[in-house]
Length: 274
Image 1 (cartoon, rainbow, N blue to C red):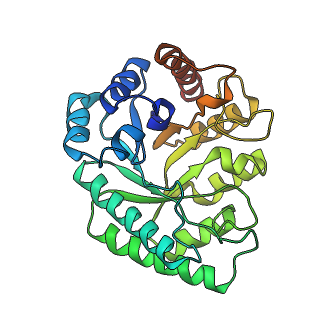
Image 2 (cartoon, rainbow, N blue to C red; image 1 turned 60 degrees about the vertical axis):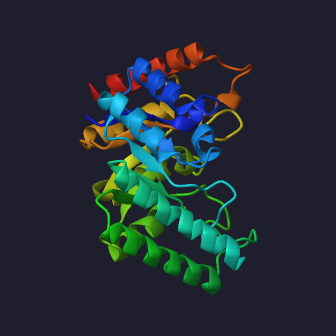
C-alpha cells in the first residue's frame, strides 16, 4: 500500500504549522511541501520553521517536496528566466535533502512559444537535466520529474517520451501526474503506468472536472477509481499525493471543510488499496 498525502497548496492560505496540523487531522500519511507555499515562500523560505513543523509531526515523515514552478520555465527562450528556474530546482533538491524528504518533484519545462519544441528547446532541456543529475548525485533524496499537460509546447507529456528519458537517465525517478495524463485519456494514464511504474515514486492524484481540467476530488470519479485499482493491482507502494484546487468549489472552504473533504479522499484510497 502506498502512502497517502496531499499537496500543501490545498491549504495555501494558512501558516505552515497549521497546514501540517490539518493534514495530520485528516488522517493522511504525509504531505507534499510546495516550496512556493505562500507562508513559506513570501517570508524568505525559513527552513528552521519548516524543520520544526516536520519534527512536530513525525507521523507524516518522510514528506515529499515540489520544486518551484510558478512563473518559471527551465527551458525558457529567455536565458535569465531559464537560469533562475534551474537554480530554484537545484536549491529545492538541496533543501529537500536537508529536510530528510523522500522525493522532490521537478517540472520538465516547455517551449516558450505555443509551438512544438525544436532543437533549441531540447538543448536547453538537456542542460537542465545535466544540472539536476549533478545535484541528485550529491543528495540522498530521489529527484522525480513530472509529466506536464498535453499541450503543443510541453517537453514531457507522453508516456513514450517519459519512458525514453528514464531509460537514458537511470538516476532519475518519475512523478506521474494523473490529472495531466487524464486530459488525453484514462488509457494514457494506464500507458504511463505500463511504461514507467518501476521508476514511479510519487503520483499526483486528481480527477477531471466537467470543464476537462484536473485537480478535482476523486471520491465519486469512475476513471480515477479505475486508475487507483490498477495501481493497487500492480502493488504500487509509493506516494499518492492529492492535488486539489479549492477554487473549483462554489464557495470558499473552511479548514474544517477541507479536512472533511480530505477524509473522503482517504476513504477512496483505502477502499482501492484494501
